[in-house]
Length: 290
Image (cartoon, rainbow, N blue to C red; front, side, top):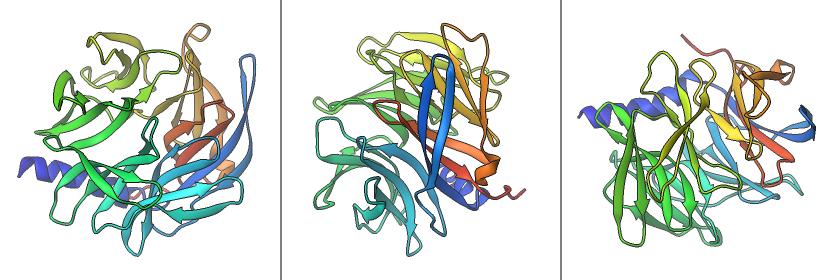
């Protein structure tokens, strides 16, 4: 029951405490150390829950979105500004990501009976298949098309596992981690948020092949959502402000932009495309209920 209670809180608190999250797309311009956001656009404009955006490629974006009271996978076409639904299941889908080298996306499915697992979904017909049978995956990323790095619900915390889909092995490498996982560009590493130090969360890297973990930098206070602009620069947000950290240049997080002019009160998930020319953000456009 303890796991089920934590699972329930994990998703329902984010849905109801952040009452009006929308998905925003920006063009990114980078000139040496200066980053500029332009051409803001709301992609979701949807009553209900919209969150966890990511790029399929430079054209398509997927995110979790409410449809008829249920959370499914929405695909947005940046060329014609159209939206389509990838799946039609009885469960709710969260955190959709493109699976490398396949015409499929993956997502965490929360079924009506409380079962929570990671599934793949065919982009053409929406057919789904369970990927990891024995772990309650909450958040994750793909290292390659055969290896998943994830935060798994165990007791009252999230622990980091590496899952090999070929041989079915699941190896635990860290305890008490956050929800943000990203393949670091031009590397064989995955970044994650370590919460082992309650006073200061940290961004660390994991080599999923040998398990080596290395400290990268401190996160912004009480912030666990980041993304990589390139192999050296991270982006993150707190409240309505967006920040960057160039690891070789900046000693601390540097302010980029105030997004309140777009109605954003609280920045959460962030993702860039492969060329770092576009940024997609999940932003709460209402004050959180207390």
